[in-house]
Image (cartoon, rainbow, N blue to C red; front, side, top):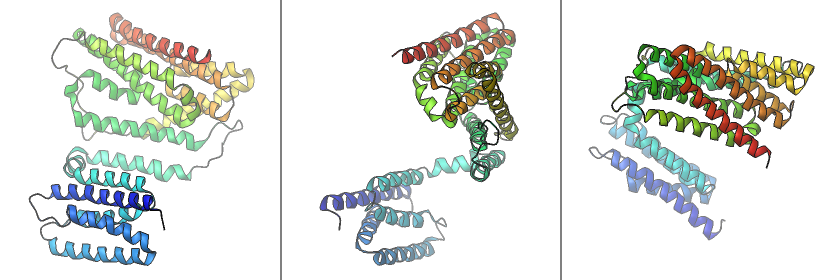
Length: 416
């Protein structure tokens, strides 16, 4: 038998869960008959806790009794409310009350989550019925299959002589790129194009910051009045790319991400500040941004994600081969060259080698700053070519400040 303190805590959590879910159900049925409101759910929470404290037989009997009541309730109200949410909520409150006798914190957290789901009926219905298109649902199912079906089937052991090519890690990169693309696509359609170029640039950066810099530069060529917002949008695209690089590092080597958290955060803050400083120079009024993507457009591009994974794998093999010939210097050179075209592939290769212990941690961290600088240089040149001198200078200055911030913070960390 638990102590009085634990018993009181468990019963209080069970009662709180029932009250919370009951309030949501009560307010959600103001114009209709409430099947189970605040009092019923409060009693169900306490009933579940008491049954769990007694013995398993009492718990089973209570579950069967509440299930029978839920069936009877549904049979009585099916003509007016054919859904099963009320009945399922009754069982959920009962089970959460029982769970509160073992782990009150977990039960309370799940209770809050269930209450949020119940309260968000209309937004969730709008999201699933009106906002999501058939194409996006297809892409979401493809993403789920890639994450939950393909990934568990991949062998955990490395498949190359140097032990750096691990298929689950590469496939996690594929899933990450697909997920970010889907999230950006849906968010762009939900918010609409009226937010202007900066928001469009931010979402585009998750797919390809290099492509975003070039396309925004082409806009500036067509309309010089878009210089300030387009430059800010390009910097925000690079902020999205920096966030994605942090995810890539964390996926392949959480330890390296932890070491580089401050330099990368400093670089991100500088990018954000420079981007907003550029927006302050923009004339008041809405900016004619990019059009929202069509509901029929592809939200997930699996071939793009797979090609990125293949490129990362090639970089890993090239880095391992150069390391065997020239040591750590060969790894840094290979990563810097790749970063001129693809920052995330270079970052993933370094993180993989760091996780495997193939190169020293200090060398791996310095190499990440080096590839960040190489990528910034390539994008600055691309900005000047695509959007002209003024656009290139704005983008290049922002990226240079970003690299300088990351380098300064990294040097401060290593000299401490």
